[in-house]
Length: 212
Image (cartoon, rainbow, N blue to C red; front, top):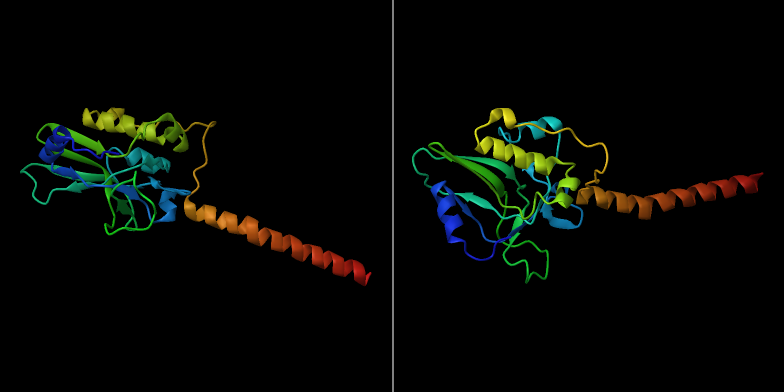
């Protein structure tokens, strides 16, 4: 999460036709964020050389504390920009995470690009705005997909197509990612539905015993 100006980064990304939006992204679609953590985005994965192995394998990525990437309206001749990861249209931005008092939606609406590639001549750029996406904790949450994504980004940047692959999914140590919407259903089921079922069963058993 970047609050201060980074002129060198800005100069580089402008050359590639990209610029960064202000604020932290919160995902408004409960199916595309971690439960109770709307700023931990489970992004939509666009079809790209980098992401095809992830799409084939059915993997999800975990992108914590992301910022938007915007494409400049006028690109230099020869610049080619492609979106790699995106939020849903329900996503929104909060300008100052440190002073944030509420999760209420602000004016800026999605979708937002949170990872993109750009090429000009023989040079290429992969820009991922998430903070610490390749941290071991988030990599475990994604079942290793975050690190695979990183390897594929490096391979693509080096123009090494043979290096783009998906490492085997680990059989142990994987953490369960539950989107907010699923969590809500589970909570309602265990707190409301299941107890009611047990009460009804108990009542039926009691009625049968009295009839006997």
